[in-house]
Amino acid sequence: MLPTGKGLHPSNRFTLPYLKRRGHNRKRKMMKTARILSAAARAGLAAHLKQGGLVAYPTESCYGIGCLPYHTRALKKLVCLKKRPQNKGMIVIGNSLAQLLPLLGRPSESMTAMLENQWPAPETFLLPCRRLPLLLRGRGRSKLAVRVPAHSTARQLCKALNTPLVSTSCNRAGGRPCKTEREARRLFGRSVRVIGGRIGGRKTPSRIIDAETGQRLR
Image (cartoon, rainbow, N blue to C red):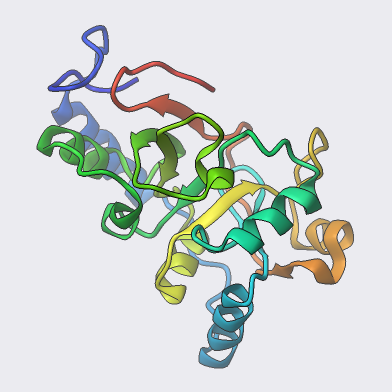
């Protein structure tokens, strides 16, 4: 649930001090990075993404698959590869709130404080966004789903590439998400670059919450 405060749902039970302690404990329990990209591998992956390529990587509960959030051709490729409905929005992850801000409208001070105290976490928040590709935010939507994940490999990948990444489950629409590097390679072959590493221990996907209303959507 969201904490009470300006712009947040009044029925939420948790206060900001609670979230500070909760976030502090969570950070101490983060997974260690399974693999760090070499400079050459990082440069190669960055070029791959700029050309509209896709990348799969471990997250809290399964492998995620994504691309650069502004790259329309890559977004179309991702939707086709997953056979995903085009009207559904996508989640974008980043290494920090600061990395995600260029995609968003200007959040209030209380909203910024809440997000900084809550993240990293398996909590995805819907926030007002700037003008973005339709495939990214979803048809008829003015908010974007964003998260700083509670998985160090996913965060460090965004940091190493100096960009947020789209993050949708690594599967065909309606199928079981890939849990390992081997499963991701077997499912998508050479269509996707795969970053090795262990997924987190979470059994379910991240919660999705509208940060303005407090409504839980997943």
